[in-house]
Amino acid sequence: MENQREMKTPMQELLEWVRATLPMDLDTPRLIEEKIESMLEKEEKVMCEFAKLYDDDLSNGIIRTREDLFNETFNTKER
Image (cartoon, rainbow, N blue to C red; front, top):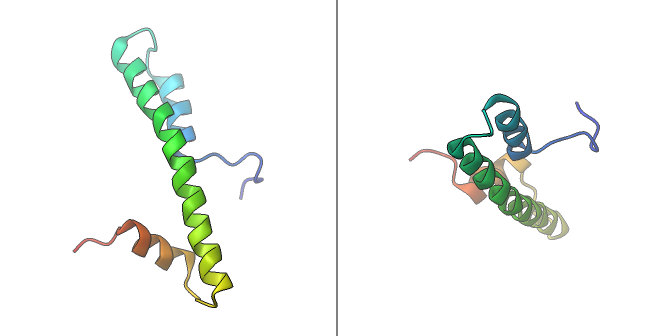
């Protein structure tokens, strides 16, 4: 596993890939880059809120795996 200081979020990895792969002198790749950059801010907020929910559960004696909390929080299970 990567060192915490070297770890990148999925959006950071995507942004890095877009910059390395697509010709950034065109409009569409630039728009994609801008969208990813804006989502980085949202990703940070979501990750912090998720961590807070997990910490709150632990401090209240609620035992759930991070995976269960993730699935409940983000409704990732198909219905």
